[in-house]
Amino acid sequence: MLLEVRDLHVEFRTRDGVAKAVNGVTYGVDEGETLAVLGESGSGKSVTAQAVMGILDTPPGRVTGGEVVFQGRDLLTLKEEERRRIRGAEMAMIFQDALSALNPVLTVGDQLAEMFTVHRGMSRKDARAKAVELMDRVRIPAARERVRQYPHQFSGGMRQRIMIAMAIALEPALIIADEPTTALDVTVQAQVMELLAELQREYRM
Ligand SMILES: Nc1ncnc2c1ncn2[C@@H]1O[C@H](COP(=O)(O)OP(=O)(O)OP(=O)(O)O)[C@@H](O)[C@H]1O
Ligand SMILES: [Mg+2]
Image (cartoon, rainbow, N blue to C red; front, side, top):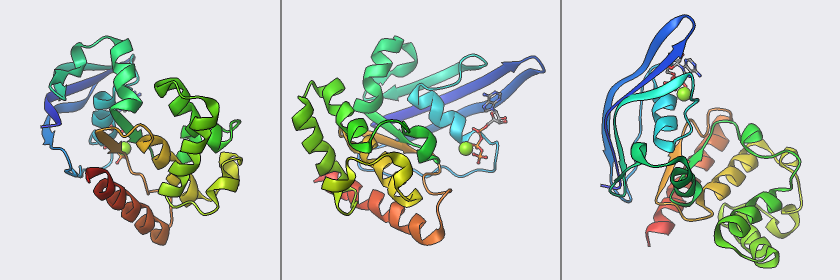
């Protein structure tokens, strides 16, 4: 198993009391597999994803029980520094709102290139070439020109593609998508889901 979540419990301690957001979630995801999590609003889907990713709002949130075993290691026992290294490189997350996930004052090219300069120690020139390559891979037309543009200059669907490009940049073993298409209209939703499926097939080869 690539990821095994076992009996995960998450609580939020606020002034109004303790909210038990996740009560004993268990699931496994194998390499190449897609797992869809369904549940009503407030049932803890996002909080579970945040706990796995290590981006829980702590405090008030706290994992109070269970294990998150990723590539054979229980992430909950690792130091924050180690978790940070795994995040981005080994597992990545795609959010509902690309506009708040992307930095508004940096060009998309700079943000994509940063993945390679920071995590891979690449030169700026090589990293820039990788950024264009990634934009091509997520089917952004005229990538070579658009690499110099800022997030607000893209449509919602294209911004979502850029966030997907960021997520796949370092070829992580796991991508967690939390409602990656909710903010998009139905046609664009289908295109983004199709892109994710295509990328999954490509990276398995
Ligand atoms: N920062 C926080 N402080 C206090 N409670 C929180 C916090 N974040 C989440 N919760 C609580 O955790 C519970 C689970 O929320 P979560 O966002 O995971 O639901 P969800 O299944 O993703 O819902 P939706 O379908 O609406 O996205 C909710 O009751 C919510 O109020
Ligand atoms: Mg949610």
